[in-house]
Length: 90
Image (cartoon, rainbow, N blue to C red; front, top):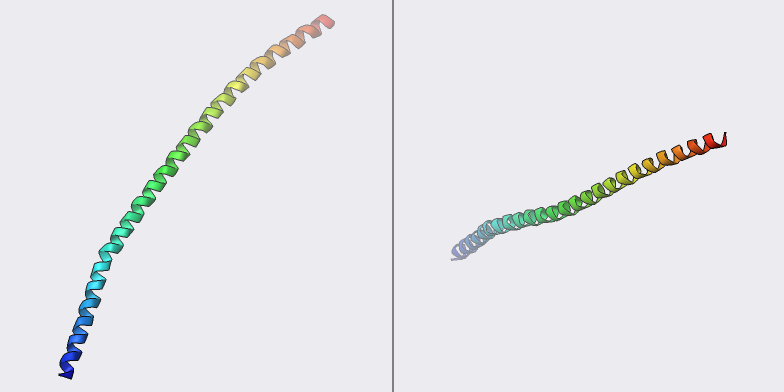
């Protein structure tokens, strides 16, 4: 009788141990998949932010290039005016 109780107890413990291990693995895998999906969403958001910043920087570069061209034109005009005035003075 004592052996029968021990065997039932050990059997029950073994069943509980095996089923709890089997049941937690899919839940862990699902959480892991969910974590990966969340991480992908976060990466996409960060990528979109980075792309917007790159677009802003490119726009600023274009504006600076235009400003440089305008300054170069103005510099040439100023140099011509200086040369003209120097000729008049001489």
